[in-house]
Length: 120
Image (cartoon, rainbow, N blue to C red):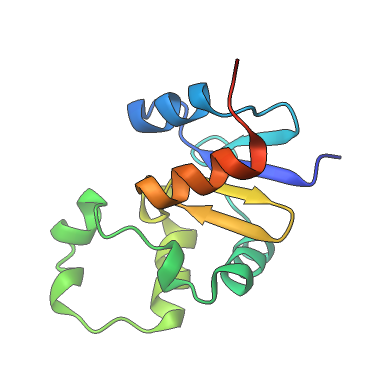
């Protein structure tokens, strides 16, 4: 079993672009829509990230439509929202050993490239 894992969406253009740049040979690729993240996996990711909020995407359409931006959310809220709908998790999440690179910021992508290498 591969210790590195990338949580992504197959149909997401940004995820596709990032995956095409990374050397993913040592990684298990997990489409978060097809392979719903388990509570145990989410707990492990949150522990590595420092919080559930760090894994939470405020760009999700439901974030706006449910009026969540006007609420004060707790860590339990973030956890339950992510478990309830895959669109609430930032993507991609690149897990290399015990390191996480979360989202599509330049810093996260560069960190993933440094740890995994790039495609030739």
